[in-house]
Amino acid sequence: MKFKFNDIANAISVVSGVSLAGIIGVGSYVYLNKDAIIDDIKDAAIESVVGGMGAGALGGAGALDLKLPADSAAAPPAAGLGLPAPNNPF
Image 1 (cartoon, one colour):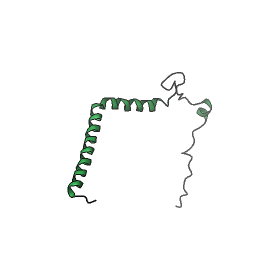
Image 2 (image 1 turned 60 degrees about the vertical axis):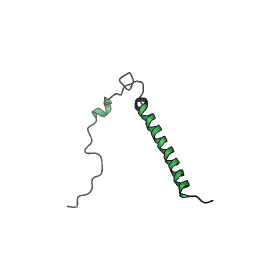
Image 3 (image 1 turned 90 degrees about the vertical axis):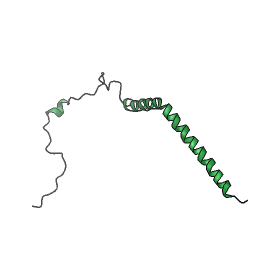
Image 4 (image 1 turned 90 degrees about the horizontal axis):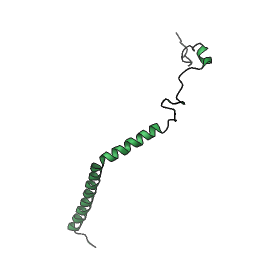
């Protein structure tokens, strides 16, 4: 079966038209529903951040206690960062 140039050009134009119609369809859908899409993304982002917090994470009875325990408050601070220092050859 021999293909003529006209047959190949017609096939390419059909594929191009279908692709363009798909791009226009998806673009129109996103443009018309952009507010709903943005709200869904915001809700998912907020849920992923707040979902990991406990019930008292925002100041309730189980809120984070930033006070030092009595035994660590009485201990003197450690000198430096506790990392080994290289020897100075000079």
